[in-house]
Length: 293
Image 1 (cartoon, one colour):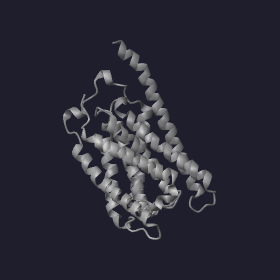
Image 2 (cartoon, rainbow, N blue to C red):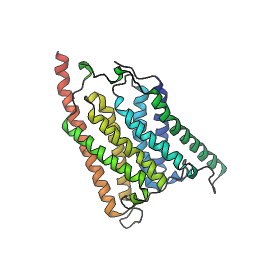
Image 3 (cartoon, rainbow, N blue to C red):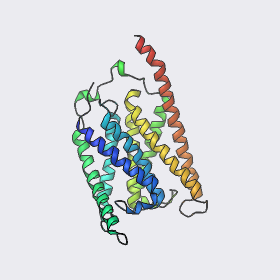
Image 4 (cartoon, rainbow, N blue to C red):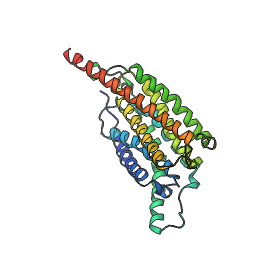
């Protein structure tokens, strides 16, 4: 089998631990998002990013630890989409970053400045590095041998993947090109910088989903399905937190949008979980038969 390029070990370990740090920050201390590389406000935006970085930390772990390329190749074009949006957005709004926090201690000002530089370096060089490491040998895209197969993709999974492609693409376009209009359709207040950063996850999910849709084997896409499911479950957790914390008349979160947002997330989580379960059940039924031969 085609081995993963070794350079991805370094990319993966940095991504895993840096994203895990962002997860802990944004989910445990969302009110301190204003001290991040740029002011991430309100708290719900910080928590959205925290849920998003769960996906990145999980995938970074596999990028670091997995030996072969086939369970990771679903990720490449979605990574290009995700990282390109972060690259463009960061440099588009670079003057809005926390270069010189006012009204805080010198220690906090220095810490925020370090985080700002870490963000810019990470999301300037990671997309370039991923492009350089991209395996271009024909063997990298070779079909899986029978002994590694875990079965074909079933209709429930293909259906939810194509749905997430459409939904992700539409939300990316809305948040990236028209963040002001997105404010009229989103449960909490957005600013253009945050909205475009958030759109990176929608772009990534859209491209990861359609890439997995066209792959043939469950063994090739299992990690990607888990990663997106973790992201959706994290967002659902953020929604549940918001629903319990903010009253219906709170101006930060409109009731009519709040319940629609939660309903869509709930449907996607249940649908994708069911599809994952069906794939695993089919794999368990096929495995003894393959072994018997």
